[in-house]
Length: 253
Image (cartoon, rainbow, N blue to C red; front, side, top):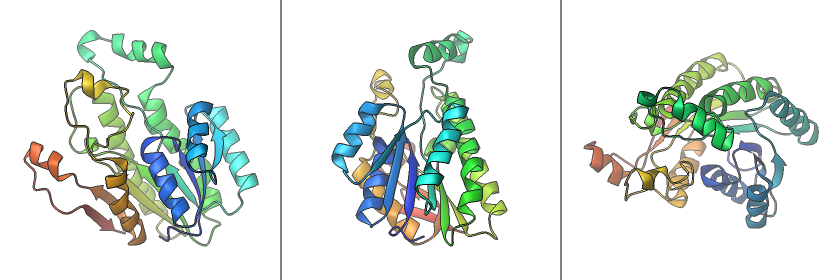
């Protein structure tokens, strides 16, 4: 996949991995649209990258997903890359029954299944017919290393990311004879605000790769058409007792 000359839409693109991807696509010469739930985050992203196009959207809401698709296709007819990046991570203890599930919904109105999985699937369904009309196109689904190394404090997050991995495999098979390439980006732990301070609450002292460290091998893997992009963190691998391997391991189509 070429990284320049595209028109890219990134969900959850105002912070963290999404913003790092936006910055690299812009540097490569692509036009980039980011959407997020809050105007404040979008403004900060725009201040950092003035060429960004921004759109306030809660992709967990069906009507806002549909409005986003209509707006994007109408205003950016050359749109050819969808990055399904938006995600949330919550600590949930099932020994408390439904208490944690309801608590998180009450605190921020968000649900991991809705944001991490259902929205991703429906965004893909909304945009795929448009992408199939482009000469070259791509869907990039952001899953997680926790799909393969689940952590007990994050049971729903890990399950949704495992589902994203499975969905990416079958979607790639469905679209094999079309112009749409399907990438899965599988981050290790990256130092972002994804967990809203839960890592510190768990007593962690290491917070993972910086987005700058993470993004370099990712963009290289896009350019090499590596469809499963696993960025290795040698320090984290050593903590788990894995062989650290190289900086990036990609699986060709």
